[in-house]
Image (tube, rainbow, N blue to C red; front, side, top):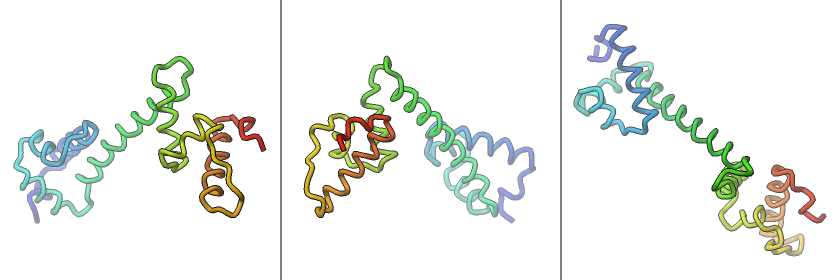
Length: 146
């Protein structure tokens, strides 16, 4: 049995709470070890000896928690008509949710910039469908013109 499994249940719970907090703060595993007051090698050994991967799960839960808070804030910002930077936030969200490349976002921002090509050209089909989808999601279907 490894050192992790030899720890008391209460001590493991305390460590897991700290690891989750470190994940939420964006600390690296080395930073997490420093926060816990143990050597990096010790934390690696604990992770290796943790059959249920509770340390990794706690760290990733902390990372997901902060990611969700950031996404929530970005969505609030993007959808607010008065928030400074709302357009940039909306462009970023469009890229993420619509899996759009940076050049594709101009279709959302400025539909008149779209190069409408003949339907057989794969780039036009892909670009046009992403443009239509973006406008649909944003409630701007009227700008599609067709």
